[in-house]
Image 1 (cartoon, rainbow, N blue to C red):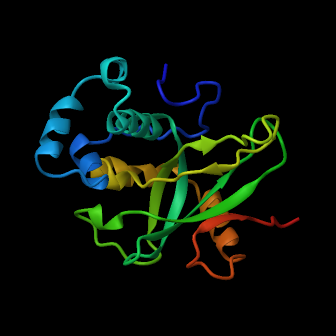
Image 2: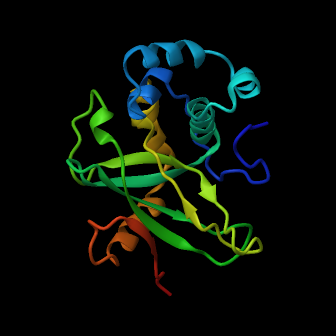
Length: 198
């Protein structure tokens, strides 16, 4: 049972990744004595943290990120601009069994936090995302958006993060590059719907 993630849906390819409190705090730019206090606090289980400190925004976000990387959906991501942290990720936003809603999302990620890897434009990375419902239309057949995050920025186990690439097939990469080919300016962040070949 999750505490922050909707249990009514299950990811087609769950991330199954554990994240590090130390790297999470670096990602969220918590430093000094506050960092050390949270390092102690975040050692407790999700259920204990949620029960006693669930109103603390950082604690809640930590629980949410842990659940995102464990339960969220694995997606293909490519680096567009390593200096700016610009990445592109593709997925299908379709819920249940509706028509395909393929999209590419261009977003920024804190790639400078990734240690032990020489990154360059065009490199492939895994990402793990949660999906957001359409609040204006609860009966919509597609999610309205998703938020891909790169596990290398959050996990101390870089070998595990690298192995996530093995779970992404070539068809998923072709969808990503097909979608990118339709975007005129790949420096502009946003969610882009893909026109599929017929």
